[in-house]
Amino acid sequence: MKYFAYGMNTNLDSMSMRCPNAVCLGVACVDNHRLVFRRHADIEPAAGEQVWGVLWDITPSDLRALDHLEGFPEYYVRRHIMVNQNHRQVSALVYTMTDQTYEQEPNPGYLAMVTEGYLQHGVPLQQLNTVEI
View 1: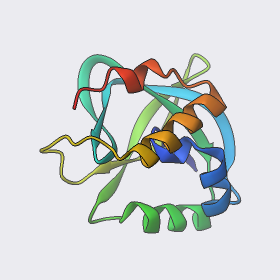
View 2: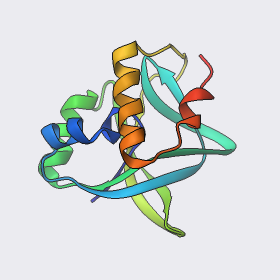
View 3: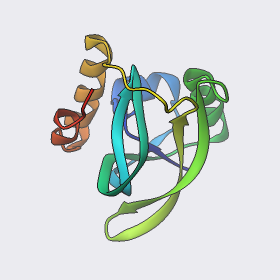
View 4: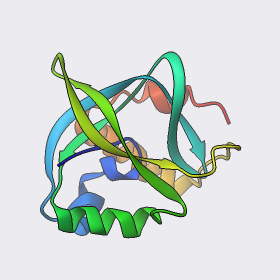
């Protein structure tokens, strides 16, 4: 199954430890959404904006590991979303936070892990710089 990551799960080292069977399919984006931080990365609908991230092909055991990491279904919930990659649309699983009523700056270690993941894949860093907290 396809999984779209936009936060710390863009990081190759982190994903290889938690989801050893995951295959990176490359950079992708979601239209009409924006990246926000609520201590951790999240996305929310926003007309005309895009969220860049990494598309993965994951196994059922990888999904269980991600569910555990993301605190599913209390902290993050899963949903399907259309992702653009290489001029085609792909349906992918994405995690979004259950409480979308606030924004909060991430801690520096978390932000560094996300930044490293973006650099590893060529995800536009501008996205991180334009997040308003």
